Amino acid sequence: MTSEPGQRETTEQPRPPHRGLDDVDRALISLLQRDGRMSFTNLAKAVDLSEGAVRQRVQRLLRDQTMQIVAVTDPLDVDLARQAMVAIKVRGDVHRVAAELAALPDAHYVVLCAGRYDLLVEVICHDDAHLLRLLNEQIRTIDGIADTETFTYLKLAKQTYAWGALTD
Amino acid sequence: MTSEPGQRETTEQPRPPHRGLDDVDRALISLLQRDGRMSFTNLAKAVDLSEGAVRQRVQRLLRDQTMQIVAVTDPLDVDLARQAMVAIKVRGDVHRVAAELAALPDAHYVVLCAGRYDLLVEVICHDDAHLLRLLNEQIRTIDGIADTETFTYLKLAKQTYAWGALTD
DNA sequence: ACTGAAAACCAAGATTT
DNA sequence: AAATCTTGGTTTTCAGT
Picture 1 (tube, chains in turn cyan, brown, red, green):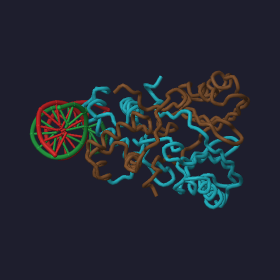
Picture 2 (spheres, chains in turn brown, red, cyan, green; picture 1 turned 90 degrees about the horizontal axis):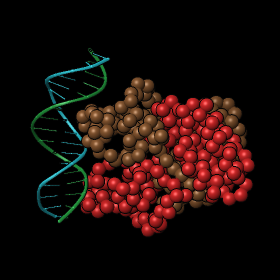
Picture 3 (cartoon, chains in turn green, cyan, orange, blue; picture 1 turned 120 degrees about the vertical axis):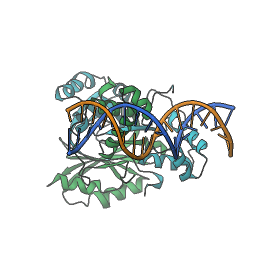
Picture 4 (cartoon, rainbow over the protein chains, first blue to last red; picture 1 turned 120 degrees about the horizontal axis):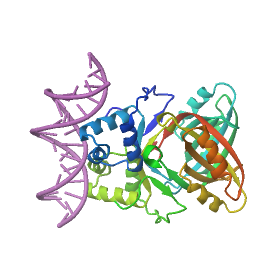
């Protein structure tokens, strides 16, 4: 396996266009959003295709970074970590700032948005000292960041990944 | 499999305490954060345990909802969906409001936080009309919600789930 | 740790667009 | 022609003892 799974960075990887997802692709994604370790044979039964065909499709979806199949936890209580959302106002090129933020290992979720802020960045730190250092030395020093506001996470109340076709 | 994977709601499930995660557990989680379909035998080699022991541990971690193994996508371009973060100010019991929000199928991420807002809620909608309906009819009608602010997602720049022990 | 059963893998060949 | 699906044989993995 040459590709590096468990990561998606649109700023670094010019991933192929994933238009042309058909209904079967969506059905597979939907099933795997519920159970990422579901066997290919079971997936095959569900979408009424051969096991081989399903395996090829899943591999393609992973290779294209259309989806990733990963373990997700609540860092707040599994890793005893500090977690926060940092909301950022930008002056200048938002894409450049986003790319610089995406390069930070402690920032695991970066999204451009409309509204009071231009960027939302979710970060995970070991402790408060780490968080402070991250904010002060690595984030607020980035050129083009006009203002930041930090929302420290207190408790995770819901975390789901099973939206999509068959969800409703 | 009797449990319902692909979902974590602390408000509904009184999940068992997952203190007592040892180093092996953390190593397994870390590996699966990179590749959620990694085989038990490969996991076993990595942590130097028998395949059976590893399988039991992984099943326990899943059963306890310490982690979930799921497919994650960028709904913005895979599902052609509208996605947004709704920031909420609460009057009264934040837990109750969080629970009511967590009950909404279109809210897939709900977190209590400190700062200007009390709650952050990530939502996924089919289109603008759906988003408007969700905000107006299902969110802002909840008792105790004093104010909401919506940040519509424009582009996902980074999405990673591989933090943790062996990450650095 | 061992074993039967199941699943994953691989490579052509067939089929569809 | 290219991409996708099937099939059959082989290897690996799984789950229970």
